[in-house]
Picture 1 (cartoon, rainbow over the protein chains, first blue to last red):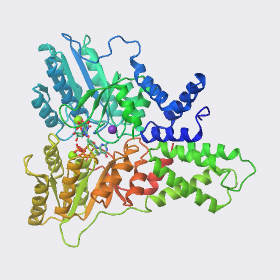
Picture 2 (picture 1 turned 120 degrees about the horizontal axis):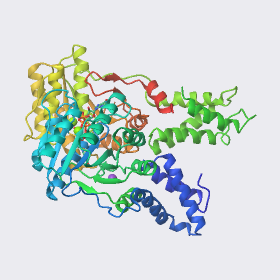
Picture 3 (picture 1 turned 45 degrees about the vertical axis):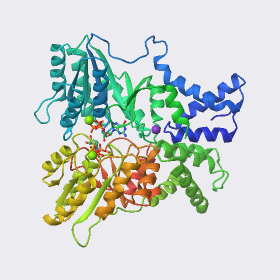
Picture 4 (picture 1 turned 90 degrees about the horizontal axis):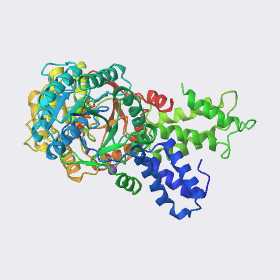
Length: 283
Length: 296
Ligand SMILES: Nc1nc2c(ncn2[C@@H]2O[C@H](COP(=O)(O)OP(=O)(O)OP(=O)(O)O)[C@@H](O)[C@H]2O)c(=O)[nH]1
Ligand SMILES: Nc1nc2c(ncn2[C@@H]2O[C@H](COP(=O)(O)OP(=O)(O)OP(=O)(O)O)[C@@H](O)[C@H]2O)c(=O)[nH]1
Ligand SMILES: [K+]
Ligand SMILES: [Mg+2]
Ligand SMILES: [Mg+2]
């Protein structure tokens, strides 16, 4: 792997950077090969390698949106938008829902939250706190272990009745190898598509930046169950780089839409491939 | 077991047909495959380097590999070394001579501390060890509600002072309460925190100084990547841990984080979390995890 203008030391250095950022060994091999090919084909000086590396990484991250005219990620005004947040346990779904509700309200959308995590202890209380903080109504079912798809159904009805523009759906954390839980998620997605056929649906996978290579598997399986359209990368305020998101983007052609950079209500930012790559490669 | 890796190692070995003696030169391809396997399992790069160096030394010491399945034989060396590094058998929870035994839970956000607190309490209750859980997470919305709900589920009391009190003070009074109740063990749940957050690490350190725990358990998500090494280093250096709990092992992550945690802290992984339910806690068995890390 990686034969080309770069010498072994340079390859090792770049490889270490990428591996330590959780890019994963396969994506790392691919990136280094691409870099070598590019350096060779364009007869570029090896000492400019890092600059080219950055372009390659940014290209990977920007590719899912290449050719799209409107790259800004916002709900459509005056329309019914449903944003479904999914992911494994503890990734940051509920917190992101809170941050999105804040962003939505501040941008003048009418928002609502569906509390469709009916399983975890105090999950509904948690999302209700975010509802209060952001002045957003929360639709929940007070019963215990109720069907989350039923909550989503009720929430869609409530949102439609009130001409809500943005319905944010919080789901329970689930590990992608739990078939029954993934089937439950698929059912939620079906309900959304059926009950709100005209809605503009975004299905977002929440990935924790601390994750290792399991993130790839998560993206594959959640894509099938929830028909994903993008990724939110959380906990980037830590020292983890979230490199697996790069592999996810490359393999599944999913754009990263937001990054979470803290536990506070304002700690959500639109994704910038430039900033992400700078942070990934700079120590 | 280990089929995919074994195949690769066999392939690496076939290139050396006829050379059944292990030498520094002919072992390199094989070591590279092991390195790839460990990295794909999320073992930290620095930990992998040290581990590979050890395996190389060990393999050279063994001298000869022969027969039809050299890959299998080599894997045995790797496997044995993994088991050895992770600590041969499981280490139990602390049990103080004078009750209450004090256990402090610590870790990054969302790793499973609160759930593990309840799991441990239930586990101890089944051993006739009575428990009190203390909720010091005043930050995460409904964190105290979560602990109260879990306490209710398993019938274990929870000490809390709401979200306006100082976590250090809650912990201090929680221990006093445990003594008053005469419980055997008190488990202190804490808020998730980043190891680079000095204020929050300072708070945790003060909690620890105040309650002088018998066990300080770092709760680590089995899906953690390279960061496992950094966070373990920081928590051990700044707080001092005596063990770890590896959570979410019911998933399909390979769990290489375990090796990093063990190598960096030198402290044992005591339990693993294998589900969302409060019963889903098991003692840690290094051999099982070694298989998991290598099984591709
Ligand atoms: N540092 C940091 N912490 C975060 C971020 N996003 C979420 N968290 C924390 O991570 C923990 C888990 O967040 P939740 O929002 O409850 O995660 P979840 O995916 O809803 O969890 P489950 O519903 O249990 O699967 C909480 O302590 C959050 O405060 C982030 O961007 N940075
Ligand atoms: N599948 C599975 N889920 C788990 C396990 N342990 C915890 N969880 C889930 O992981 C998520 C986070 O668990 P918590 O116990 O809230 O984590 P925490 O470390 O207390 O989180 P913070 O207090 O926000 O830092 C919840 O959805 C739990 O149900 C486990 O062993 N397996
Ligand atoms: K970071
Ligand atoms: Mg949640
Ligand atoms: Mg907690």
